[in-house]
Length: 137
Image (cartoon, rainbow, N blue to C red; front, side):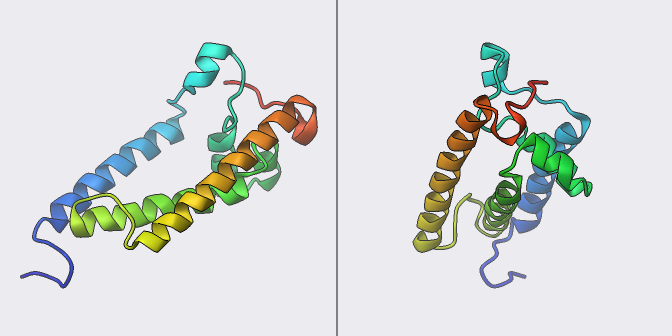
């Protein structure tokens, strides 16, 4: 039996996607990740602190989340939207991507604006804003 818009392999694709997202989530919860930029330069990258900020925010510690990275309040919903939509599209169609081209353009624009904000906050932190640069762990 086939559900409208969903192929025969949707169950297998759903299990694969859940396994990948679960594995990445487990690595993040265990703290098993390293920023390549920080490893090479020993300086924080524009996104340094976002993972720790997300973990703090998800555990209810808003103050710590703001300390780690002030853009966490935009990053978390944007990434959830991106990965959530791609998860659904992978399960339904077997490919990653947005449902329609207009949504894809909107996401590209949002990520562009967010990237500019990341760089602005990154530079501002080197001048002491937002508590200065976050430590590289």
